[in-house]
Length: 228
Image (cartoon, rainbow, N blue to C red; front, side, top):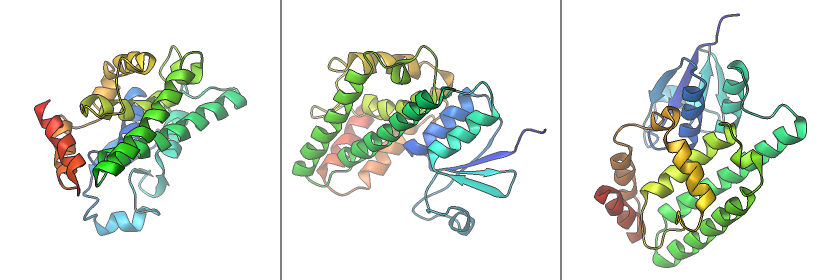
């Protein structure tokens, strides 16, 4: 059977899109990539995306998959060996932690885009609690800290990449406070699949996006990004 034609539709700074790009890159799957402007999406995207969100994966020109976790599982299934555990309970646990990481991605976004100082502090506290749970879990959980790359890693990498870039004195992220997560990120960021999952000027694009948000916190984070 011929390998399916995979066409990923993307927004350049979306962490959920990045998960699927990491998976495609790691599995060495041939794919076509189209980046769109979510603020002004083309008509064909509105027609193709049931939720109006990215990513979507168009398979063989006609079948549309949406939601990054679903897209990643499909990519994984058609490019063996699979990076989800084969045993049903362990596979379910990996899926559960992928969902947990989705919630942490939303928590990070609320921190990045908080409209005022109170919201910024609340969001930072919420995000820090999520990171603390991950750090504890990684101590002895191979679903989060296995010896090989997994679909959990594809979900974790975009979260940690943004924390590593967004240096701020009130950031929920501190590598010294989360040594296991920091070590995992050090391993992940060295992978070509992760490095090649964002545009070369990703920091600048993220800073531009944050500058467009209301409130002082996003602009402070944008300035930190530009300082490097």
